[in-house]
Amino acid sequence: MAIAARLEDKSDRWHIAVIGDGALTGGMAIEALNDAGVWKDGVKLLIILNDNDCSISPPAGALSNHLAKIVSTRAYTCAREISKRMLKPVPGLWDIAKRMERQAINFVSPPSGIFSSFDLNYYGPVDGHDVVGLVEVLRNLRGLNAPCVLHVATQKGKGYAPAERNPTAYHGVGTFDPAVGLASKPSSKPTYTEIFGRWLCDTAARDSRLYGITPAMREGSGLVEFEKRFPERYRDVAIAEQHAVTYAAGLACEGIKPVVAIYSTFLQRAIDQLIHDVALQNLPVVFAVDRGGLVGADGATHHGFFDLSLLRTVPNMTVMAPSDENECRLMLNTAFSMNSPAAVRYPRGKGPGVPVTADAETVPVGKARRLLEGSRTAFLGFGTMTNVLRPAAEKLGGTLIDMRFVKPIDAEAVIESARTHDLLVCAEEGVLMGGACSAVLEVLADAGVSCPVMRFGLPDEFIEQGTQAELLEMLGLTSEAIEAKVRARLAAL
Ligand SMILES: Cc1ncc(C[n+]2csc(CCOP(=O)(O)OP(=O)(O)O)c2C)c(N)n1
Image 1 (cartoon, rainbow, N blue to C red):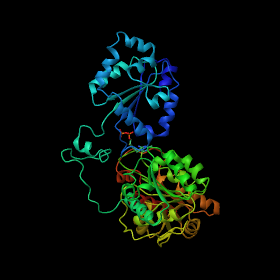
Image 2: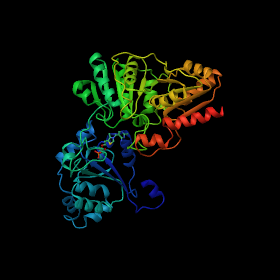
Image 3: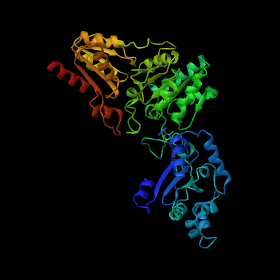
Image 4: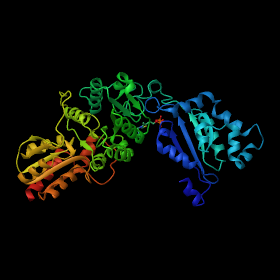
């Protein structure tokens, strides 16, 4: 945008990018700094680094050490004082500053490591909680005419004692009473994330080659206990999904068995690494893909809609979607037992409450499981949607199959169902385009078998926020809505 403004001769317009110290660890941030550093006159880009020395959990990596060193060793004064220093000691300094960008900035704040390496004007660190002073600094920086970085030191959770004490818990919250703080949730059924966390610890105890990787999502991905018990086999690579995947590939090359715990939406950033660095070499990396499907409150950026469509097109990949908690454990075992890359994709939150009785057992690769034997309609469920299809299948006396595998899909089960039923109804919690239901159509087309097919899944549009139940309702992905549509279709056949 800053470059566009220069091209369009809107050179008085400022562009401000605010980035956290955690977000700065992402490769793309470094790519942008590398680019910004070559622009000089007329590019009014202010990068405000909001450095609270915290990601969601404590920051990981050398960059955070570097920033902490700057904050602790620099004359880290209140913003107002720095602002005064900029203007007062040498009359006319600011005029000189405007003419001699870099030198003047360096005069008020000596060059600092990483930003100076990118040839960017660096200014700070300043106290981000001194709001009046900060405004003064920002006013002064308005006089500049080239990209610069303002390093602002803050405290995560500042101003609310419970959040100051436990910033990780308060990073992202739902509604709560500020007088009480976050109530600890009574845990009845475990979440899929917890099922994964337990599986990871149990499997690590059994197999010393297991290595757990998270790109800055220790809590969200269920790795807290694993880190405590197996610190030497745990790695938070910071908000660097691409690195997380290639890091896993490197470990797998050497006989380690990496498990990349990653949210579906964040895996999108590392699809190239998954293809080139893992799948192309057929390396046994397990992808524990959390938050697959609708995630609810986090909204459009966090839904995990694309994973099935993206992953199923990659050679050598196995893609599984569990329909309940026990299935999730069985599939994680299966993925871990394979000698090729495999993804287990599970949803946010709790499952239907099926007790986890599995220990280290696996399931046959590429084989579906038949849950109900019926006639006329065969319901083919992928992952969570199997449970949504069940009441409809029961009411309509249909067959219900939990497909288990999106890839390799159980072609035999699909073809046999098409030959013995009048209608196939398939459902997935992912984009319909190119997803698991498309795989069913491909099987039928390739086998030359024709059968009416109804597909239920996510439409070709971005979905905003709402609870998972609200969104399923809105999208017509409830048992009742599916049943009604299937009844109408059966009547028309
Ligand atoms: C690509 C990507 N990976 C992971 C996340 C999850 N996430 C959300 S906020 C956050 C920490 C951000 O830390 P920082 O940039 O320092 O900002 P702060 O919240 O501390 O202000 C993480 C890891 C995300 N939103 N996007």
